[in-house]
Image 1 (cartoon, rainbow, N blue to C red):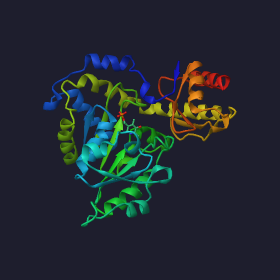
Image 2: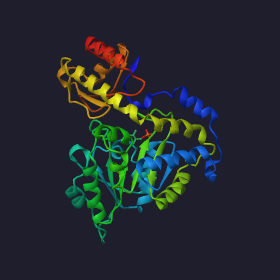
Image 3: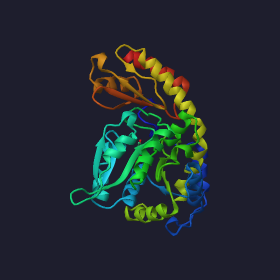
Image 4: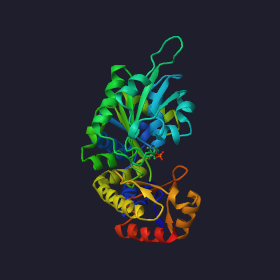
Length: 337
Ligand SMILES: *Cc1c(COP(=O)(O)O)cnc(C)c1O
């Protein structure tokens, strides 16, 4: 089976399993797990913040950020296709009482004008905007790598109006790799950032939330509130430390995605744009087949992908798929269609 559904399907390698087995641990709710503490320090260094917090999932990291930055009833300003809008069960409303104001942002990143016009000032009738939300890479728009200048432009417009900015960087290291810039250059303008260890970096579990000392102190309380205070978490944080060593491997996933996209585009009825990172979106409308049918035929040929809109199939490359497997997948897909 060649599983291209997501980069979350990667399995921990021997290095990670060994690291988990031998991890030095303590009670992390008491701040006494040396492995978690090391991971939090290294993650903060990577993104250039004062502090970081280990969280079980990217969703929890995002939801904690929304809660810490805002007051109930405020607005959260985000691109219509952002993960927090589409795939977090309305958590911003549920956990933090936020009203989400959505805009259609080109390439998924709000322009300074969209931020300026999207922010509402608090008055007798309007709740005020509590948080501006950005995403990089942008998942639903096809793994787009958003340049640091675009992040900075949106952040500056928000900060001029005293509104903080959170970056959902689930695949932040993919963005930095594609743009060939240090991760910290992308994150410098924002007030908090979440990135996943459990996607392309290959850890079995975990994400990092990073920001100022004060932000992380508050985030630690909200993590406990949300039920995410963990005890000997070094067992799962140790593979996360190994995952931080895998950043340079993402380049290979991007090359595989480019190869996959080129091959797919050559298949009758598939329309595929060159990918920027490890996500490939294929428009299959010209095949004349239902997306479900395409996915079924692929599965029968031992290739897995996911539906991503009415006529779009998403393929995602990752560290457990080799160059040869991409070529094999292309042969199987062509035969199946
Ligand atoms: C995967 C993802 C998340 C959530 O991460 P989980 O660990 O699956 O909860 C958040 N944002 C984006 C853009 C993602 O792709």
